[in-house]
Image (cartoon, rainbow, N blue to C red; front, side, top):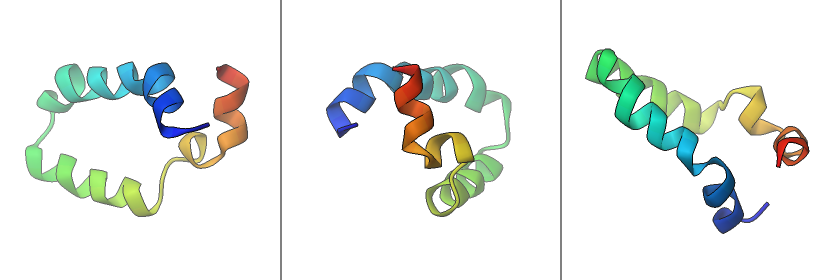
Length: 55
């Protein structure tokens, strides 16, 4: 799935996390976990086949 398709299909999830969920947590902890996710993403995001099955 290309970047544009990903953004169109899943972009709303990131917006919900950023706007509604993230403010409920300590900012430093959020930043640490975002960096961790870049190098060790959750298996759901790591396996493209799982995402394609949902699209």
